Length: 149
Length: 133
Image 1 (cartoon, each protein chain N blue to C red):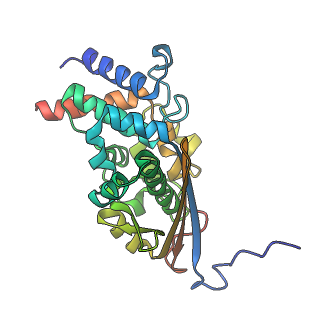
Image 2: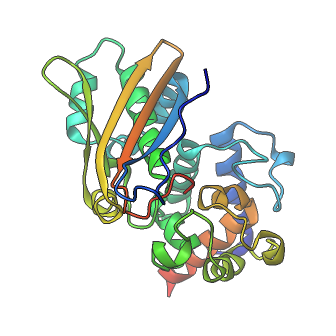
């Protein structure tokens, strides 16, 4: 069976556009970083993220997964960490039943709004060695955020 | 602070953060491609430089240095390709790039893959000079 054709923006300019980002992080890298430069924690993670992970037995796995999620979101945005953006502008919080959700702040939130972001979802997973996250960003069809860019 | 001190600090920060050999850290080595740095490694390097040199450089400052304050919509087009204006800016901070070769092709996501150890040292030297002045 042929795969479904991608939506042609020229035919339906209001069609939503999707972009995915994924990132994988070695947990040991996070452990080493935080051990050698503990002040980095406040640069990378919000107080809410740090508090959530501190309550976990395998704190560094959870922190690594959250860092991977921030990277995955920025990859889905196609921007990386741009001008005036901070790592804490992408915050991963957990809903009541534990499902992670992305909360955007500051310049990243402003940038996403300007570009017509309508939805953003993230999924995390981790082992003792690796943490991985995937993000899917949905853009308003007329936002100019093309599938190629 | 002398240029030699800055060079030494940058070299040490890159070696310690990335766990690479000193002889791999050449001026023309690209941090992401040649030396295998990831975003978290760049952050580690910048923090080490701050501790050593007393100059704060945030990750977003790196982006601002590279983009030179040019708004996103002028730096890259809707397809994420760096514009001519963006390329001219990149040539200022990364003199080693070949503008004619990259024109119409360079994706915004690939910009930092061109950033070399020398580019980093030049940026740090600029910051040190700005702080002193």
